[in-house]
Length: 120
Image 1 (tube, rainbow, N blue to C red):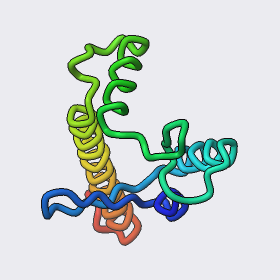
Image 2: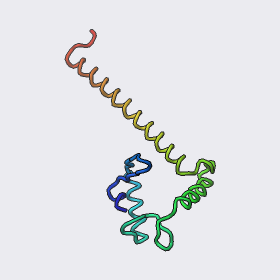
Image 3: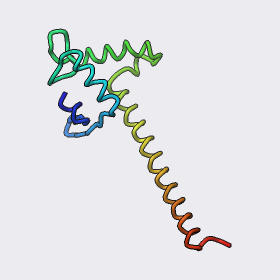
């Protein structure tokens, strides 16, 4: 709950630390879910008796969702989802850097035109 409220989740595995930003729409949805379930702190996803869900159960639930989403069951595991997240993030970041580069070129051309350095 604390990580969702902050909007950042720290994943610390095998001496590799990664900070995952929770998008605002997902953060709002998770906080609404926690409020409906009466969860104020600790793990958001809990079993019926209040203990955190084990990773094998989470993997089984993900595989069941794959059938509804028409995704192959072998792709429904945390490792594949992490790869999907990282590749999507890299694609978005490369698009952003391309847009920034294009905007800079456009600004430079406009500035040259304004100053009068353009071709006549």
